[in-house]
Amino acid sequence: MGLQEEFEEYAEKAKTLPDNTSNENKLILYALYKQATVGNVNTSRPGILHQRDRAKWDAWKAVEGKPKEEAMSDYITKVKQLQEEAASS
Image 1 (spheres, helix red, strand yellow):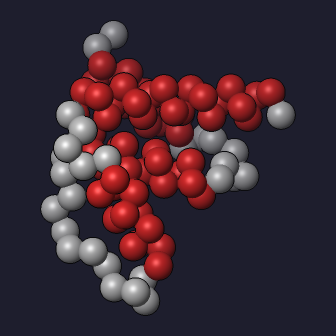
Image 2 (cartoon, helix red, strand yellow):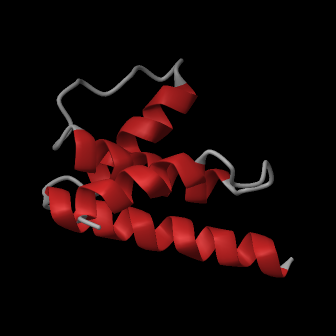
């Protein structure tokens, strides 16, 4: 299985993570997904009244410059880690 196929598989698995997954972990997944699928941030930072969108933008900006393949690999690793944590709790 290639990296792209594995990434897509884990993107589907991420949708089944428990509801109690922390916002911090959700933001990490969001940022890595966006970096892997879109690349570097291509929008302006949302205004102060849009806290949720601003947090997502900031998380994505934090991984800016990370190559697509590395972002995919990091995403897969993070989903695996969160699945293991959910299974052990």
